[in-house]
Length: 90
Ligand SMILES: [Zn+2]
Picture 1 (cartoon, rainbow, N blue to C red):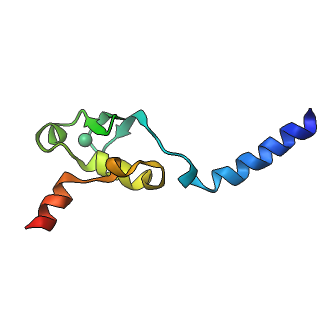
Picture 2: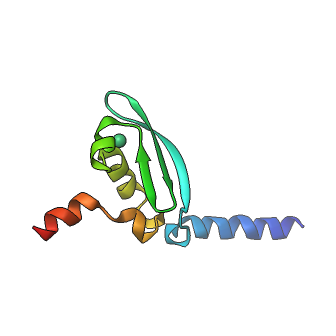
């Protein structure tokens, strides 16, 4: 019993070095910005943030920061940036 738990702990340490094994399908977070904290959520391929900028643009510094922080653990659609795609097209 004890030796099998030790095996699991060692496996967990190996897994923790490989964030690509994990894909976040949904989550919520509190983002502590410079001026205020914002509620962020990601679910069903869509980001939400409580800040004013996000309500106009559908993207903001908070969601972009999380895209960078969690890059290895987010599905492809979560990393798509509508603003970056627009500027590339022009
Ligand atoms: Zn925001």
